[in-house]
Image (tube, rainbow, N blue to C red; front, side):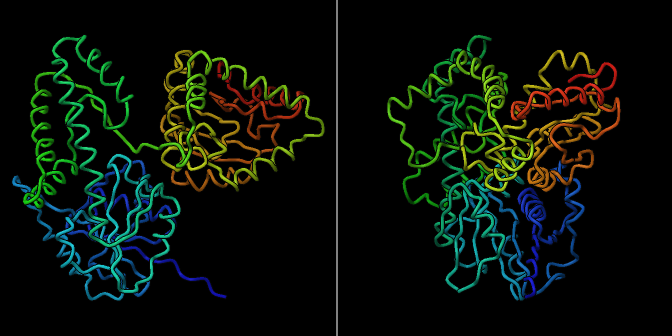
Length: 492
C-alpha cells in the first residue's frame, strides 16, 4: 500500500508569525515554502540550518497542488484611533483564492471583519514572539475556527492539537474572540499591577522597587503578567487592545480603554526611572481536576522549602545508588531496557519528572528546565568557569545525555558537544530534537565505557545518572574511563 505523500505548506507572509510556522512545520518533517513581497529578515537565528530547507517562491501558486495548504500569516495594521486595516490580508487571501489547495488564515483579524474573507480554517496564532517556534510546535492554546464547508483538516493541524495544552473548536468569530481575549487579559493585568505599583511608591530611590515588589508579590506570587516593571509593548498587545476597544465602542469598554491609558501613563515613568523588564510565558498549571486540599497544600509547601529541597537533593543520589547495590539480578541490559521503555512511553517526562506540568510537559517547558539546569550547574559554577576559562574552544562530554535536555545549551558555548547514553531510544529522540546543531553528536554506549580517545575532553559532565548503574565495579570502570579521556587539567 503506497504511503500518502506529505502535505506541502506554503507560508504567505514571512514575518515573525510566518517564520515561526514555517520553521515548526519544517521541523515536523513537512516540505515548506514561503512567499513574501519583501526580502525577509531571519527572526530566529538559532534555527539557521532549518531556514536553509525553506524555499522562497516567485509567486504564491508556484507549488500549487491539491495537496498544498496555504497558511496566510500577513499582519494587520491599527491606526491611532484603533481602526484595523486588513487590506494586505485580503490581498494575500485573494492571491490563493482560485488555488487547488486549501487555505488556513493565521493572521489577527477582528471577529467583525472575518465574514467577508475567503478561507477554510481560521487558526489564530496565540504565542510569544521570543518563543514563536517552540510554541508553534507545542501550542498552549490551539484554537480552530472552521467554516462549514466539509473541508478535511491537514495532518499538521491534527499533530498540533495532540500536543496542545488547551484546545478550542468552534466558528471563526469565536476563535477570534479567544485570540483577542488572551492578549487583552495579559495587557489588563500588566497595566493593573504597574498602576498599583506606581501608587505604592514612585521608584526613584533604590529601596522603592524592592518595597513595592514585596507588597505586590505577596498577593500575586510573582505570577506571569503580574509583576511590576515596564509597560506592555511589542507587536500585539497595544494594537490588539486598541482595535478591540475601538470596534466595540458602542458597548461598555471603559475598563479596556482605561488599561490602555494607564499603560501610556506608566510608559512615561520608564523615561525617568530604570524599571525591571519581564518576559512572561505560558503558565503551565498542575493537571486539571487535581485538588490537593489543605493537607496536600501543606505537604507541597514543606517539600518546596529550601532546607528540605537541599537535603532531598543531597540524599537522593545516595539513596538510589544504595538501592541499586541491593537489587540482585539487575544488569546493564536491564537498565537499557528500562530507559528504552520509558523513552517510548514519555521521553520528556522521564528525563525530568519535576516539571510543573508533569506527564503533560511539552517541548517548551522541557527546554526551559534544561536551560535552567545548564545555567545552574555550568554557567553559574564559579569553580568550573575559573578552571576552564573560555569555553568556545572546549570539548565537553555529557554522560547520560538522555533526550538532550541540557545538551542543547552546551552547544551554544562549547566548540564540540558529545552526548553519551545507554538507551538507543533516547539517543534517537535527542538526534531528532537537535539535528540542526552542527557541533553536537550522540553515541549509544554500553553503559560502562567511553568510546573516545585518550585526553580528548576538557569537561565531562553527568547529572543524576551514575546512581542508575547497578554494580560498583561498573561505576569504577566509568571513573577510570573518565580519567583516561580527560585532558590534563580537565574537569569532571
